[in-house]
Structures are given as structure tokens and as C-alpha cells.
Image 1 (tube, rainbow, N blue to C red):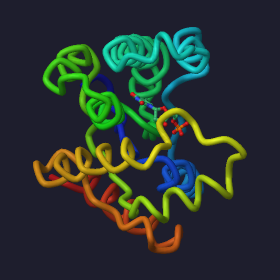
Image 2: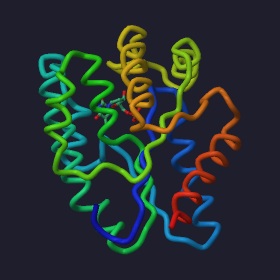
Image 3: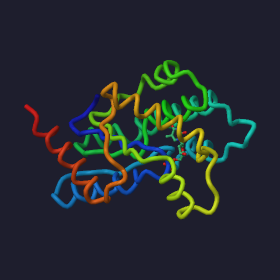
Length: 199
Ligand code: TMP
């Protein structure tokens, strides 16, 4: 891991409240007078936009995993690493674990996904916001006119199971997404502050 900053990833299935948490953490850190930066994946750079424009014939989880890994490496080298070197707390809304959960749920081998992502460092802290699939689908329906390719109950259920496995392996920190946003943000900030205070 390069630089003096801290890399925090926020993960979850669609509708879990990742963006509210990631933006909330950044705002609260900035309010304390510290440097914090919000960013997201897929990015709005060339490869991220390419991913968004994929048509059905390219919707193979292996092709997707390759493209997400390329977008992530470019994102890391050109934005995340730069901010970490400047001392920022960088909060990334989706990171390596999204590829493991989603492309894994769609059938790409998880060991291979990890290998593709070996040139981006793991985050110092990675939160996973858990919500039941029925709540996620209700939230997606009210927030979007048309569900995305991934927002299908079977895929979300598999992705959730992979995320929960990563929690039990100690790679992700579990947050209860059914709680009010302020409670979730406070809990994540406590964990970040404890991490920063560690000897
Ligand atoms: P978003 O809803 O957070 O904007 O994410 C867009 C979709 O991208 C979401 O349904 C999950 C998907 N995704 C992957 O499948 N693999 C990845 O590596 C990333 C970063 C996102």
C-alpha cells in the first residue's frame, strides 16, 4: 500500500445504501478538517464508460471481470494512489470485492478474479452493508425506472452470499443496512477512527 493516506472501500448489493455511506463518511471527515475524497467504480473514465455501454453479447462474466480489473487498475494508478500519496482518506464506492461478488455470482472463478486484481492493493478497511434481497429490490424499484442487468434476484442473492462469505473470512466488516443511515455512518466512522488511533 502506497502513501500516507487511508483507503476505505464500501461494498454491498445494489440498493444497500453504499453511496449514502461513502459520501456520508467523506463529509463527516471533511467536517473535522481532515482530507477525504469520494470516488466510485465503475469509473466515469474511458474503461468505466465502456463497461456501462456493453451490449448483451459482451455480457460474459469473464469479459466483465477483465474490464472491471482494467478500469480499477487505471483508477488506482491515476486517482486513488495520487490522493493517498497526498495524505487523503480515500473512500471508494465499490472496489475489488464487487468483482468477486458479482462476476463470481455470474460464474467467473473467484481465484482468477483475485489474480486479475493483484496489482491494486487491498483497502485498509472494507465495509459491507448487508440488506435482505427483498428490501434491496424494493429500494431499486423506487429509485430507478429500469433495473440494471445485475439487479435480478438470483444474481443479487448469489452476490450477497459471496459477500457474507468474505465477511466470515474477515475480509469485510459487516454493517446492518436496515439501520438508519446516520447509525451506519457513525458505526463506520468509529471503526475508521479506531483504526487511525491504532499504535
Ligand atoms: P452501482 O450501482 O454501484 O453504480 O454499480 C453498478 C453495477 O456495477 C452494479 O450493479 C454492480 C456492477 N459491478 C460489477 O459487477 N463488478 C464490479 O467490479 C463493479 C465495480 C461493479
